[in-house]
Image (tube, rainbow, N blue to C red):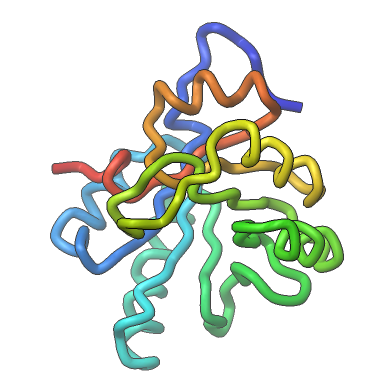
Length: 172
């Protein structure tokens, strides 16, 4: 059930999606997130060794700060993003919503809710379609794609438990 408290701090419900374009601000951004927020570690462009080393640094800081953490692409010692028994699962369409439910995903990342810089030209789902997909996937719902704290404060009334962003959370 989404938290509808008027005095809520949206950053406590935020997930940072790591991305090479924020490398310079990555650790400052992690330090700015409050306990309870989360991180989905991606950095798919790095070699396996470099990626694992960076993940270990990110995980160490996340744990020290009381942040949730998940990793896409399978890393040793990391809760998975997508795939069987995933902690977090991407949901872009009905097929993925069903797969997330079958995988028993804890967190569903429904995207793109709004237009996003990460995927220019991709048609956003819009609120109505995002809500329908989220309801079909089970688990807790996170809105991703063009998200800001203000947008999540509106979406939480539709059952979204959190929001995720790259630019919307990056310390600059």
